[in-house]
Image (cartoon, rainbow, N blue to C red):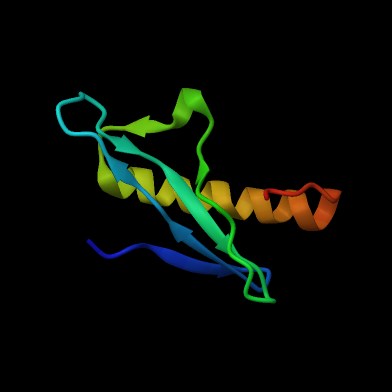
Length: 82
């Protein structure tokens, strides 16, 4: 499976979706973020209420959107994800 990636505000965001077979919603969304200096975060999971999805594509896109939000929070509000 190829990982969905994007660049947002000079940060590379990679969807890191994990499969949990046997569940009705087997895809657990998450992402990793690499800053312009090459530092990569640990896997950042989606909030619990939105973490599990029934479709891989939806989970990947939600993971990328969450990563963009995290980058915006860091750059605009000084919050850190590490």
